[in-house]
Length: 170
Image (cartoon, rainbow, N blue to C red; front, side):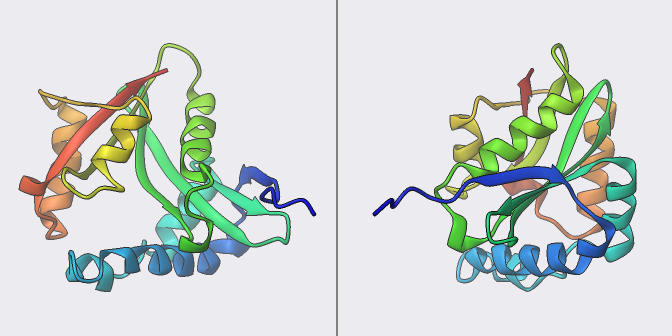
């Protein structure tokens, strides 16, 4: 009997999948229960934002063989690179390198010479330490675009003292 995981298809998201993606984001956020309850209870990305990213080509999904959307990455242009706004994988699919594959696929959209940038929680094991294992390094000095993203986060009530910007050249 073959116990290897079923293959995952990485593809552009479809507008009809917006609510599926929002549900996936809610399920993934439950990992924060007991650690950062406000994050676990936070509303997922608004549907119009997701739809806009899909139309712009900035949202990829990982689809399991059975059709389940197992993960997604959402990104937008930032100063000649891409800013990863959100990366989530359903807990049932954790440990299969789906997040890493989604990040690589987003990077392929940019090509060689660009940079992937993200902002994440410094001390959450599946955040900054995970990204460091994938080749991201902490950014010491924020660019104007990163500073604008930090301002967006502060306006949403995120604790920026607990967060770090990280970048990975392509």
